[in-house]
Length: 436
Image 1 (tube, rainbow, N blue to C red):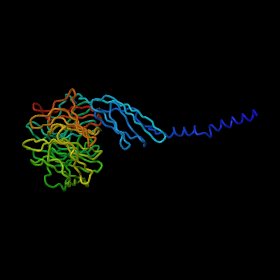
Image 2: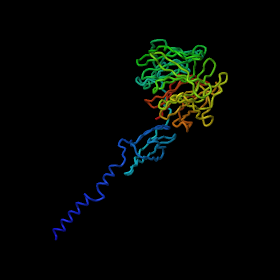
Image 3: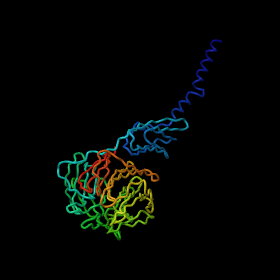
Image 4: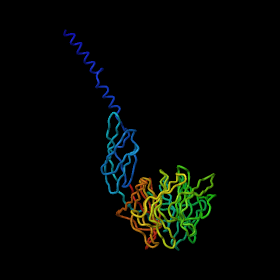
């Protein structure tokens, strides 16, 4: 009898492990929980910066403190509001087996004006509307042309570079004929190549010259590009000109042609070294204008246009914001904001496109051809239906100005801006706004 009881106990014990409803099934459920093995534990963002994270496929929700976060179509977007310093985002991933929480700490670097880039060596003379190219490989900013002040409006056909680590200037040698023009617009189409289009020369006459610039060496190699198909009113200045890498297409909008502000959109493709232009029939878009603030969002294929002059004898600045979808067929304009809360309308300010917002930086510019409008503004354009405008008051702001130039330095995560003039001074400086 005692032996029978012992055998029964052993059988029941074995069944508890091999035959029961608990045990292995619990282990299987744990193994099936969602996971995010490469989830970041921390993020560093600059004020106003937005980043997107893509967790593994699962039902997800987010919560945040100190920063903003949302989940849409499986993508988590984290945004660092202006004025924030730190925060945390909790991403809850769930499936039929259960859920897990992933906590991401977020530190926010403040926006700040840095010391200007300057050295004791002689650099370029003060000027308006130079063309800027950032040469990442050589860690330098290239400055081409513009118009000088001795006398006012003198076209400049020179090229300079400032070393971004030391602030030392050097004049660049040029192989080929570099045009002497102000407000040439730059379409960066390669790691070491760009096209310059348009601008104004002697007496303010507008140009339709298209110039290729190769900056792969220490000096520049330039050549004029043959053009076809670009019909009436081709010469222009103070316009937009950019390259869409997804479609290998160049675009231009508006500007001053003769003495008329333009509202036309044209596209161009390169065919065996020849630029072939066509007129783009868009829907009704912004008024004719020049000297506007603009930037191209390469990720989404959108041109953004803010303000600009609608008149010549009087500035008559526009007080609006438009978006052009160049990947639609045909390219399509959308009015985004009109009037408040946009900054005061103006022309010929300093602007730069920052893809990490994405946002358009606006500094200076004139509403009346006499004074420069104060304030540093960030136009946050991450959502077409909900753009936001931020005026930022930061210590150490450089002298206010109009007719300067700006560019985003992705390597150092900052905006570089300089040149131009104010009511009392002209400038040949390079200033730095640190964005992270």
